Length: 352
Figure 1 (cartoon, one colour):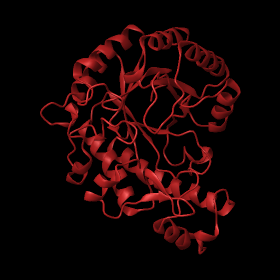
Figure 2 (tube, helix red, strand yellow):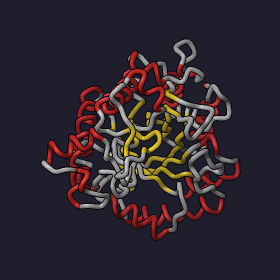
Figure 3 (cartoon, one colour):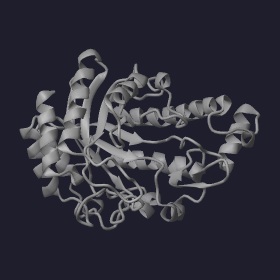
Figure 4 (tube, helix red, strand yellow):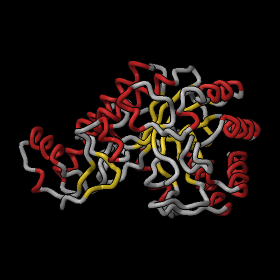
């Protein structure tokens, strides 16, 4: 990404959309005009949804070319049909307005019933006692890692446009207390000679192995992305939570250009905000700030008000003064943001 401060929205093509068919071209065109009027310069398009969190929407939101991915395509989504695909036009309209496009997805989060139609050796992550992490797949299972790669490259090939300047993804990681599935046990034993069942969350050997293992997988994927699009920036959506396998000092080496931490999905204060951003140094940061005023199924987010958004804006402005690695901010998710909250966002943008 260029050396400018990014300001924009992140919006789900179907995720939290009011219509079961997701957004229309006109919906996003209206948002682009609003963004241009308020001098925003980045639109992040979330190209997937999950009925686990949003019962109306499930699956990939573009007309996939890889036949193995068909099992995950959202058949209700307007943009996922070849005849009515419109994101190509959105990218072009954004370019006319000086707004860059990011493609965004959440790797490793899938509908188990649909995944196994094509990816038989994909499995969910498991805790120490064998409990399943619902809808969160293990990167050590060959099917899941194959799917994650297929998803990214199909998306990049579908939207190979000069105005797609970055790709962002969440995950390729573990949940904090996992994974103890057979694939992870086998990989751990192969690389360390040790028995994973004798370790638990927080044990140094286990956590260091997770960091190395996830770093290797991130590098594998990111090298492939750069081979297809050498000019594209890669953004990893993570707050470097304990146990995920994401280590601040490793991320640049594995091809991550920007870290997109989760900001205000859950209650936080300025001290916690500063500490989180400090923990991500020396990486460049684009904040992903939740400004939604509506909660979700199975995901009890911090419902925002204009006053909360104003406070977050103060934190951002103060941190930005002394930290050149803070490169931007995107607000999530425009589909469930009240007019009052939108006004607070645009006021924040003016002050930045």
